[in-house]
Amino acid sequence: MKKTSTRLADGRELIYYDQRDDTVRDAVDRRPLEPTVTTSEVRQDPLLGDSVAIASHRQGRIYHPPVDQCPLCPTQGERLSEIPESQYDVVVFENRFPSLAGDSGRCEVVCFTSDHDASFADLTEEQAGLVLEAWTDRTSELSHLPSVEQVFCFENRGAEIGVTLGHPHGQIYAYPFTTPRTALMLRSVAAHKEATGGENLFDAVLERELAGERVVLEGEHWVAFVPYSAHWPYEVHLYPKRRVPDLLGLDEGARTEFPKVYLELLRRFDRIFDGPGGGEEGAGEPPTPYIAAWHQAPFGQLEEFEGVNRDDFALHLELFTIRRTSGKLKFLAGSESGMNVFINDVPPERAAQRLREVASS
Image (cartoon, rainbow, N blue to C red; front, top):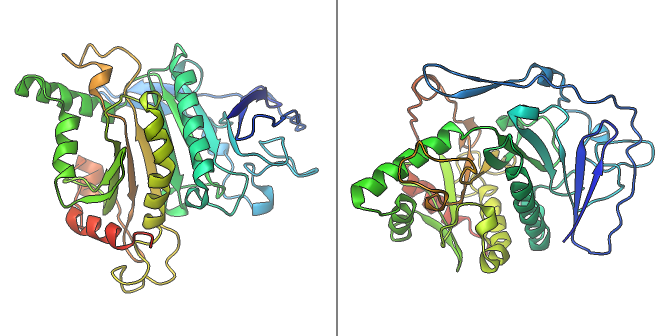
């Protein structure tokens, strides 16, 4: 992998990740951009303890532009974009409309490929491996910023999810705090460790799932399963079998196997609602909308989670879709949005069975 860092016309950082070591990146951003101005502010809810990012400047972000005006495609002649080069492998750059900025953290965009019509599932194993290298490198770099406590790499796919740009891409949020969801996990880990005299909760969950009927896909270094208490109709958790706190901790074997396992998982997601078992309108269903989210241990202090350190956390990826059956979405209505109590219409065991049925031949 070759890494080349440069600056866009408004001063934002842009980084190329290339498979070939001899690749030269010297194109200049020719757009007449003014320096980026953000109004990001983090406020804490006094009752719930949640942190909320207030970012009014995001109202002006680009919304479903025509394909020939996609800002994530490479620059072609006088059609200027966020990427000055005419082609690229993987690119990461500071978001022009960040939810978090300055002392409130940082937001970056990750472009998986220069092919506008592709998806992550269309990548080769070599390309997917390069994305993993980019995620790992950015996790390392961002963790050293003084304002950053947790790094979150994720992908939103599909208009139903709320994606405003169709180009295959993901994002990285570098939070100045430990996120509420991670804090809940750490509190559960701490309570379980105390109650059992030192047993790790993630290890216990993984051991139970490996022995059960909800395993979807298993390799030498990774295992994917539908969790016992899945919140979403089709939800898969992907774990390395050796517990590590973050992407930096993965060994060479896990890094090498990841692209094959993850690409197969994404391709199965695209086949869930197509054909037998996929519902009455399975044939011709649009690509499955999903969120893919990496959960990593915070880099800040963990004193509030008594008896827990970073190594007690288990890196894992959670992949889920908001589609519950062909042509129907799972909406977060009163119970979910009002009380955070999910109601799942698809039994996890049935979801796991369906994801095994659509395995690649």
